[in-house]
Image 1 (cartoon, rainbow, N blue to C red):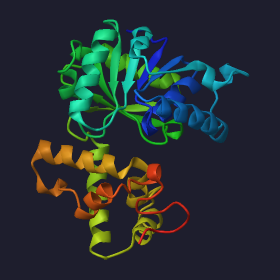
Image 2 (spheres, helix red, strand yellow):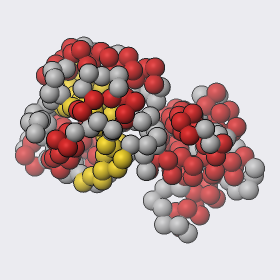
Image 3 (cartoon, rainbow, N blue to C red):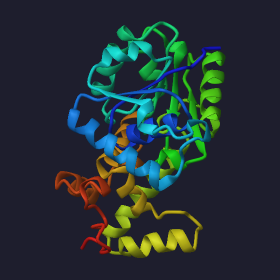
Image 4 (cartoon, one colour):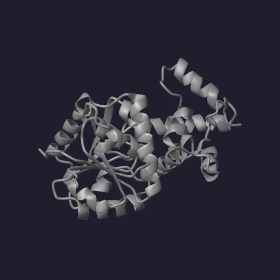
Length: 287
């Protein structure tokens, strides 16, 4: 089984920030790579803030700053030192394909690639590499440091040793895992994206407001967050892209994105990351 000493994280967006934080909080050296220095600077600041807020610094770190375990860089060649790389770039297959071509050249043969995608099949990603047996889905949920379980996705050619190494890595950072077979959207997002999309349609049809729908999901159905709050947290652009991937793969109209979702994304109202989505994050629902 692959011995994992250093973890690479590609993409310093919301999920990359959470992933780098979680691995470093578990005491692992992390290389966080992004093409944007501005994104890396923002990631550094957010991780420092979140580490204080979450209180998740491992006891073994004893006085060491969690930031000290993370290398923030635009240089992808530093991934040559990584034994496990988690990719978190945008939900666009053309972009992901180029990323995997690059890291496949850089990383040593033993390195495992963990794919953090919302809906793109893991087997599709694996086919873009020369190591399909060492490609596995690692579906992290936001906020990553606080989630206790990770959905792990077994691609068609993912080896048992890759699954074992992945589950061992997750245990080292205090997370359980559930291994599922490969399918677009896997278990969680295949169901969740339908729920979110239907909730958006309810807003569009004026059956209920975003706040009313979310209250019903929290207080009647026992969800921690309502579907519109969840959409804003994920990012409405990511929700839209995920639904488009599901629609393309299944050719089933039930995955057709709501028109309101398309309009909000076109308007740049993407949720928490832009300050506005279904809520404006100053305590008021968007009209």
